[in-house]
Image 1: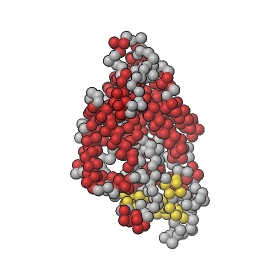
Image 2: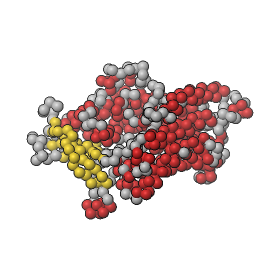
Image 3: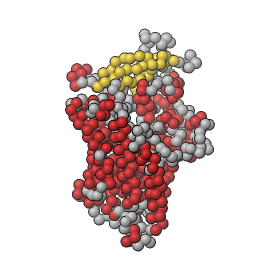
Image 4: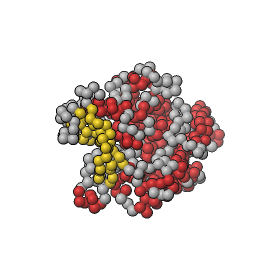
Length: 484
């Protein structure tokens, strides 16, 4: 055993509550990620998916993107990977591996990291979101927090705080370097309305007075550009900084749906909260956490080696943070460790939605009975209150938001229209409403609409939460019969 005075600089006994939140919270988000994948991946990317993984693997660079599917993919094997991920994350949420030696939660978290990396690295555009690599990096980092038999390692807590710093400060710098709306404080005039997937309170947030929106932007800049530095300050400043970040992230949770992005920021921010501060805020949190033994030498060596690795890998993200051409949500190594983060460098001023319609009629003209498919998360029916989905990730709905910003003529979208023409049951389960109750439509098409939130007066008069204006036909009617 390492003598107590030798390990004293390494141990952080006043951060046991932080460790509990970090380990169980990150594990809970892995559970959500595996559940989301289990429910959606086969239809989107499976053997009969929109972008089938077997086809992708034919041109796959095995040396650059580690995955368990490098040798073979099948939907059955994929489900086994997700099942393993759900079981491991579940027992970590319960805290069972943490009762054993420190290597046990280490192995469990590294297993989650490898299993989910295997999914992300073949997920193509449906897994091209910053919170995927954020979850991977968080899982690897908290793996070295040890177990109840040792005190939390100080170096790992600092590295988790460094992860939060890159997440927050990187996002703040992206905004300052991005659209003018962040500098003239008008970004929140639009964001609540045009964000990818509004939540049940998004319309109310949008209708708040403009001076409040300007205050929101000021608060955002303060929380992302100033507060993160204080995560490394002595207590109680470190806990106060973490509390500010948690508060601002909770506001984002309440006003939108960003999968687990905000939730993982909340969980990771607890790395800066000490036990005395946590106890002062919530007296139910104990002050007298006790470990059952001293830090073993072998665990000290393993943890310091991992810490040194993450410090070395930080060189490239640091350069990126201060680069004029700052990258957003980018990884500098194939293991997706110590990445760079950031989002919404510019804010969309108008909300354009792609609506998908089908008809059973022989002739696809305007006299035909066109019926619109309903999505679970993205806006469609104008009276419907948006649902709260986060931290669950609706991948199809998110990609639908990107279509009008890029092009509707994407491979996966044409494949999606083909699945609708086939009335593919797996694909229809990803939708909220099939207007044909499982029957095959003869034709489908894509139309675009301009959406905006209804004012309070408009809502009282019509009951509509959205006002939508037809724009243009993005994809004219297509059918299987036409060979398309």
